[in-house]
Amino acid sequence: MSERDLYREVVNEVCEVVRREAKGKPPKVTLSKEVAARLNELGAAKELFDAPPAPVPAAPSAATEEPAQTYREKMFAAPVIPAPAELAPGDPSDSLERIAEEVGGCHKCALGGLRTNTVPGEGAPQARLVFVGEAPGADEDRLGRPFVGRAGQLLTDIIEKGMKLNRSDVFICNVLKCRPPENRTPNPDEVACCEPYLIRQLAQIKPTVICALGGTAAQTLLKTGALVGSMRGKWHNYHDIPLRVTYHPAYLLRSPGEKVKTWEDIQEVMKLLNGQIPRPF
Ligand code: URA
Image (cartoon, rainbow, N blue to C red; front, side, top):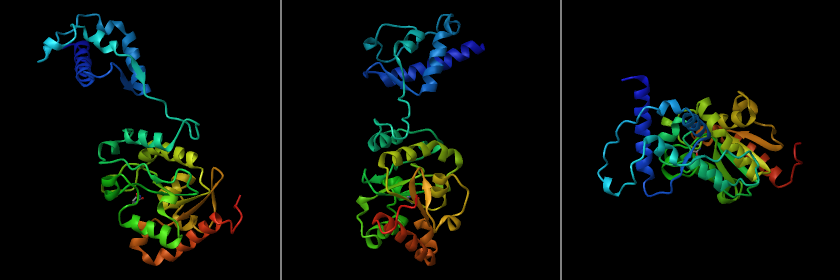
């Protein structure tokens, strides 16, 4: 089989799958910008389709099908609509709901194929305090909600028993919106794919304070490789929002002796929220 025939066969297979999927639905296919551009290029490359197309295998419901078309006609009959471009952080038409919807359909990295649920985050859209963790674990993946496992219970206690706030008054999210296998540390590619969602969430909420829980959150937000121990105890500047770094609740479960340090960090956060200390910048 020539390379061209092989190529046509692959394209034909794809067309068939798309056609079957699209049956009964409006004749529109939403594609990423890259795929749309590639298909448009292929559409322009007429020589690929000059030879007569391979015969179309008769489908079982042939009687109800539309009149026979060439594959090329079928393939390019549906308008190619690029997927909506990702909005810039703070775009007036952006919203937490829109971000959560995009996260729900995201397959930018391989974790999209492994998840049960995406975990975009939850809480008050106008929260004055945002907690940012690392990535969903097994419980979060199962329920589609952040910090609902053992570490989550500790975070809830910090918020409700320690800070005397309702969990629903703050916003809680993670750097990654899908669970990494075996809860391994997110790899840089995964962070690069997912971080735009976090940036957009923070640009929508515009909190008074951000609290980064653990190294992955702090390093991602502050663009540093520094360790939590050296980042604690001072204010950092995240795009003019004061940011405090503290230990991740999962670490505190393993090292309960460090809880006192997190409580010191949280008290600083509360002082800023309550106007008991001036904004650091
Ligand atoms: N650990 C995290 O970093 N995030 C969660 O949502 C749960 C556990």
